[in-house]
Image (cartoon, rainbow, N blue to C red; front, top):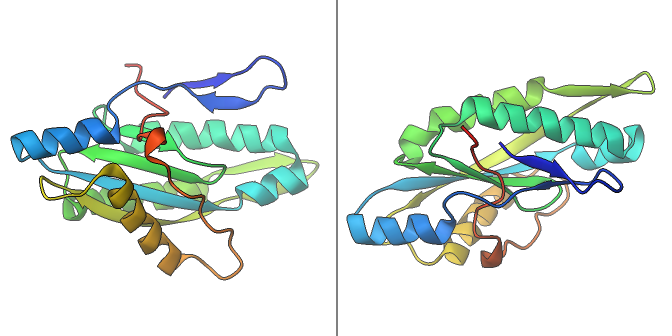
Length: 177
């Protein structure tokens, strides 16, 4: 997983590489292949930044990037959409076969914590799985379905997800080998 800093304020960003949602949709339409979109809406990251500081939030992001790398396959692409939303293109998986990946990620996210100023910060998440097939609409429609599913599961008072943009194209974090 590629996580880079801008070198100034140590803002972390995800380097764009790997297949995009458009690539996966096009392959599904041409080859009748299947993939799944796993959308994760994290809770707690904003609170970590507010209470423990942005350095603690950056450490949490680094730990989460390791979790994503460990729990997903080499052919999968991970994207960060906003401060607390991630999407994973699970190549060659249906929502049913992607279910164990989703559960493993949700459990692993709960197990990650950071400490600063004698306080601990933790995250949790809700997830959605959407099939990507030859009959899928465009990337925006697939993302809209995932957002809808996450919104139905979001705890009361949790921040609403950012509007997903097709320009993000599901490529923001990738494998490096």
